[in-house]
Amino acid sequence: MKFFLDTPNLEQIQEAQSLGIIDGVTTNPSLMAKEGITGKENILNHYIKICELVDGDVSAEVISTEYEGMIEEGEKLAALHPQIVVKVPVTKNGIKAIKYFSTKGIRTNCTLIFAPGQALLAAKAGASYVSPFVGRLDDISHDGLLLVEQIVDAFNYYGFETQVLAASLRSTLHIVRCMEIGTDVVTCPLKPILGLLDHPLTDKGLKQFLDDHNKANTL
Ligand code: E4P
Image (cartoon, rainbow, N blue to C red; front, side, top):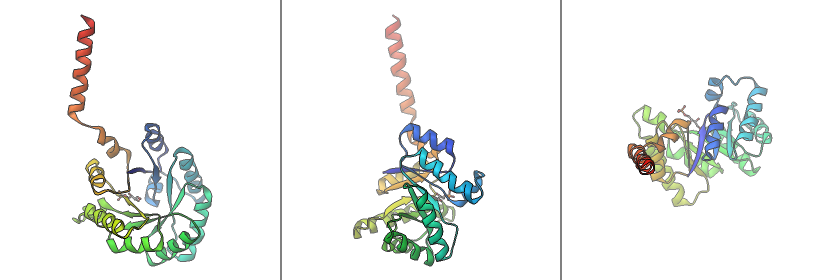
């Protein structure tokens, strides 16, 4: 299972990269704005900085909603760095753009997936990744993880090469459930990833080992 970090924050990316457990980064226009990364040139330069920090795929989202705009933007983004994956919303124009990009060898992440049929069309168009949004479905009392499971099962059944990238994950338990489902990739902030390490018996066991060692070696 791959771990992507869901942030454009360079310090967080560097910290995760230094742990050696990060396989890529996802961003979206809201996250970029929240980090204060604004203006066309600054945004493009920031994507390059992220690519230089991590070894894996970096999702960069198009802003256009029209087909021609998506193509122009996506080609520009893809030309920035070989690690860039063009993030495209699952709209009619988005699906058409994903098909175009896949014929040109440009990798895509189809975003804002909230239903299995949307993931199916994205896979048919040749998306490299589909991003079902778990937390946002949970927020409106729908089972976000059930959607991930439905997509993973269908893609396995039909042998689609498109990878399922569980997004909008909010907790450590979301990550564990994605592991049980067999999700290809999870993306979330660093905190829930580090939460995977937490267990009181680990802390207790380690303390006991060190206490015993120190007692035996000070006699
Ligand atoms: C990632 O690709 C998504 O943009 C992101 O996970 C959305 O997360 P949110 O629902 O917490 O904003």
